[in-house]
Amino acid sequence: MASNPAAGVTCQANGGKVSGSGRSCRHRSESESDVGPTVKSLSRLCSRDEDERAAALEELSQGVVSTLGLDRRGSARLGKDTLLHLLRLSRSCPLEDVRGKATELLRTAQEQGVEVPRALATGPSAFIHAKQMLKEGPDQDILIESFLSLGRVDHVTMVMALHPAYLSCFLRTQHALLELDGPLPRHWRHYIAVTAAARHHCSYLVQQHSAGFLEAGGEESWLSGLEHAPTKLRSLQTLNKLLAHRPWLITQQHIEELVCPGAEPRWSLAELIHAVVLMAQAHSLCSFVWGCGLNPEPDHIGGYTFQPPSPGHLPRSPHSPHSPASEDGRQELVDGAMEVEVLMKRMVELQQQQEEEECTQEEMVTRFERERSESIPTAVVRGAPPDLVLRLVEDPEFRYEDFAPRGEQSPPTMRAQDYSWEDHGFSLVNRLLPDMGQLLDEKFQVVSNLTYNRMAMHEGVDTHTLRKALWNYIHCLYGIRYDDYDYGGVNVLLERSLKVFVKTMACHPEQTTARIYHAFWRHFRHSEKVHANLIVMEARLQAALLYTLRAITHYMR
Image (tube, rainbow, N blue to C red; front, side):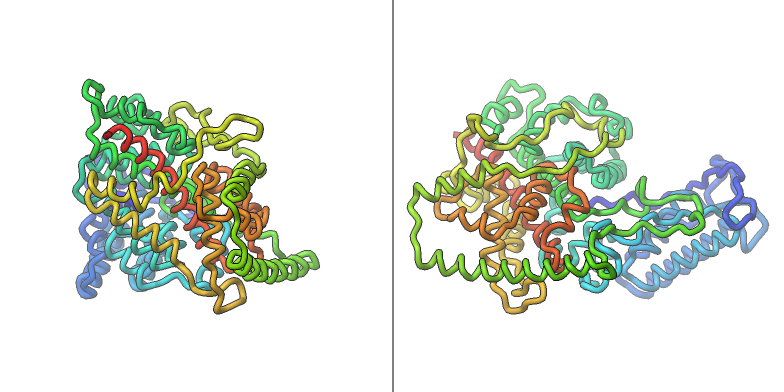
């Protein structure tokens, strides 16, 4: 994930407002020299050497004390960026000594009359209660490694840490896409990710990659609108919107317009592959962010406030439809337990049926078409996205439409046997963007094979048929058919509320709501729902890539 720039230390005037403690808040003009914590001391908190980290904590503490004027007469105060950096460390740093010191320094600043920020959410997800996250046990070792490597542990990482094997390869892929040597400049990579995330109104990722863009030396004016970006980047926007919403419409002609001799500006194939993977990865990550209900980071817009809590204020927490204390809640728990038993029985019966019966190819095609054209309702469209998102979207009215609307002529189905990731896409990506094919393939393999052999309260369960049904259903929504798969199994294993969630998350994730999240798999662990999110995310990514890579292959012939 893109990290925020190192916390700034420029102190900003606070207008002499009175803080919640009643003391007059001290301030100074921006023209005065900085006397706060240094960027160096903040970055050294990520050192793997415990002694160096301890020294950095002491330096940070002394810097705050000096800035607050506790060791001398003065009128300095901490800058907003430094306060937000401390807030983030106090909320999400997995190292107890760093987290504790950041909390202590914020308390000290508040006692000295400085208005300090507070986080608006109690945990990384609006759908999963913070206590439930702790109970299901995100892997602490990988959170610590993430902090030491990246300088922060964001909400994506916290939730993905419920599945450490997947998180490891996800972070490697993100690092390679955004940071390692490649055909595109680093600030361009983040800007491409910004415009991709904007397609799904994902202010979380827009803010995160905007920070990475500025840190990499990008011009701030580019973030105020696409018209300020170079023509070459703007030329990607048609491909961006098709990748995000209707990748099956991507053709050889779209590729020619970007890479053929005479194209102005011209993209090399290596540059284009890099941009395509960046966009597709950002689009699919939007599905995860919305599907898991991720809250804004504590140092992002919408994640903090400088206002004191009102009397009786309760921190924002997930809204669950289940209330164990009520009759309705108890009944839903009983119903949820029954759903698990029914699903377990269906999985066994389906496996036996597939072993005993052989379906004709005609019947397999009929079942695929029935699944593809099924009408699945979606949530009410959200309100208008914030301006920081909308100004980066070209043709905002272009949205997802069903691959095969009922009663209409649909595009030709993509048969996986004619163009697949394993036989075609993998080698093309690896040839044009070395090692990226391998990284993506590892991610696809890990999420496809990820299992803990349990389901809800049951242990020792083979979940292969359920995982495969999920993956193939998403590809079905994108018009991709496997000749050797019986799509009748999708209808047997995926009940309607799960289909609503999957289709919403895969096709228009910005419409995902807590109600949709809580409606399916009511007796399952949250980690199992996150696992389903990962499958949706990766299946969607592969589907979008396949259509684009096929068009590139046709161009290269």
